[in-house]
Image (tube, rainbow, N blue to C red; front, side, top):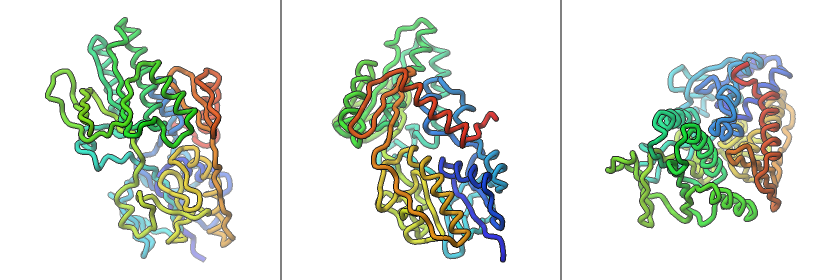
Length: 391
């Protein structure tokens, strides 16, 4: 009996957990391969804390190379551009096709920018994180070198990601201005949201708390504003101009794009069944609806019977069920259904070592103890599953 080829596409949170568990419970007769563009991947739960200056880059990056070594798997650093389902091959940008018997996809998502003029060219998307951080580090350097110069930042998207980004960026930049003995007024942050409410998919109690914090901190809110264009500014005081359908125009140094998640275009041509947004539709077993030899987890997957928001908490929770069902598939055993929780705890950092806690209709206002709790959960995840990059 020949060995089976199990290929993992993408180094998301679910696959990091699969690799760790596979290393702990190896299965003979399986060739395990991970294909991902980089040897490290950021843990989304700690990204706002890193931007706020509380974690080093090494502390929140998962070391995929060490995880693949631990799992005795091959690591191919490449970008997947297509999947040939008929011939069971993964098509990569650089290397020859990779054959598979069983495939799992966990490549995350990217913010949708395509429909807005100039967004792809001039805005910095929240994903990929490496590009976000490259521009963020440059902005930090510019403010540190010229703290006397006024700076205006635009953030498009008023979901949890946009809110945390606004508060974390503001807190870090204000500390730089304070150390340079420059007025806090040198910094202006504008948060634009096309809905009339921040975090529209959350309970009104957390919407209220978040809006209170942003207002108290002086973040300028533009609710019910749909961005229609981002273009180079004609004024010397700013690099970019953000234009909205209402006629509102904002001059900004940088614009960060944190809108609704979207799937990569190449998935559409694979033949996998997807939802209306291009995400892979999966059963309760995390199997593709159309191709039982293909699994998907994390942001790139939509559970047909249990749709949930694109949030890191679900990617983490799917890791163990994904591992169990991949293992069962190899062994020819019945697969186990997985049902994600309806209500889940959300801890939203406010950039100042405090956090808001929300679950269902219950919301607790910002507090240091809630940040301590969030920090403990995140560090435990990295220690248990992540094999952090500095180790």
